[in-house]
Image (cartoon, rainbow over all chains, first blue to last red; front, side):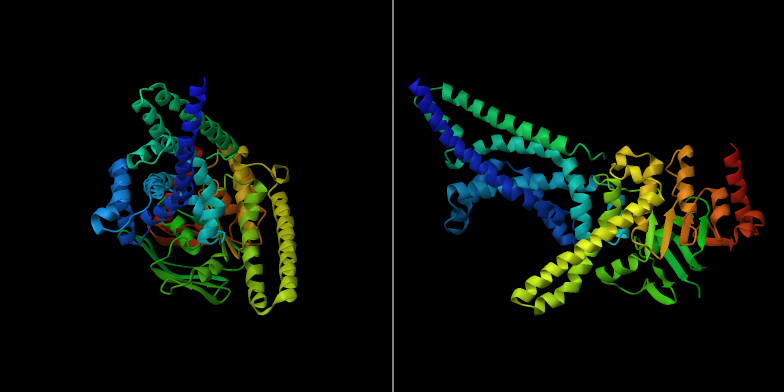
Length: 215
Length: 281
């Protein structure tokens, strides 16, 4: 029984890092994704192609490679000190997820009928007013289901942080495996399930809250 | 030159001329109906007047003054001010689905009031310091409160005017098509445009719902209106002037009697005959 508690406590500590990576990624990637969207939808061609190329590269290569590139890259290429482990993980995740989010946003923006913005325009509203008072909420309504998917994937993707030795929950469990204790590794699944369970309820609540908007 | 004077509108889309030298006049308080086959340029003309498209060439004069010239470039702000001279009611309403009927009407007037008050107080606030600045802030808040109360009163009055007072807090999805279009009309009226345009306001409606919308438009007599419509009987009844547009030109123009009863051009005759047959079916 004490073994169980000790393992639980150790895993919880690792889970703290998992949660930190998760939360930091969301906080930065959600707005950054919007900037990427605006860039990739820009009428200024060079910016549009630059953004689309970045999105292509980021979505086209494994997140694991990106982690390694960001953590070891500066030292290998330029011989300068890079970021610490945890910040490196967060930077890699934020860039990666911002790119995925940006495509969801783009689909959402393109899904809001053009007539909505035109109706705002003939009423004399500024572009920013049209976006914040008309488009945004309809966009949010459209993107909640695909964003839920992406955010749930993020919960599990955090386990990639162990590639550059950040002690998240899976890495803690693997330490036990090395000592011959297999069950903690499977036990981590419970943490993920609970976390995703709470998120699922949260997403369902959000969808319910937005149900009044019929589009 | 009449109240509204449109001069030399031309517009091309990908090499196709949609508007070919459109000229017309409309006195204040009169109703102009624009009829003609689909693809004849009617909608594009309304969109150009409402700054949703920029014509390649052409000028608009309002009340004797040059309002816009296709060759000139305007700042966003200038463009918005000019835009407010016109209102547009769309064929498919385009109500904001996340706002109730009253909120749909209030959104733009409230945002514009906010901008205007901010603008008014900006310079004075910059100059003021300390307690004077605080007093100004309070004054600004009060001014805004008064304006938004005024907007609300006006919006409620407009809802009553279109016969939807009891639907005040309904979302568009809870309204019939006819009711949605009536809210859209109230929304356009809330900004008191000099010229209100209707782009086939009943084309997206079931036949039994067109009557209620036409009734609301009929009650707007006395305002300057431009109505693009396929409802021939309605155009004949309410319009003071009629334009028949086809292939990007105004083929024929005159009073309803002239255009509907004594058309001169073959194309007009053919169109009216076609519409009659369509109506008889």
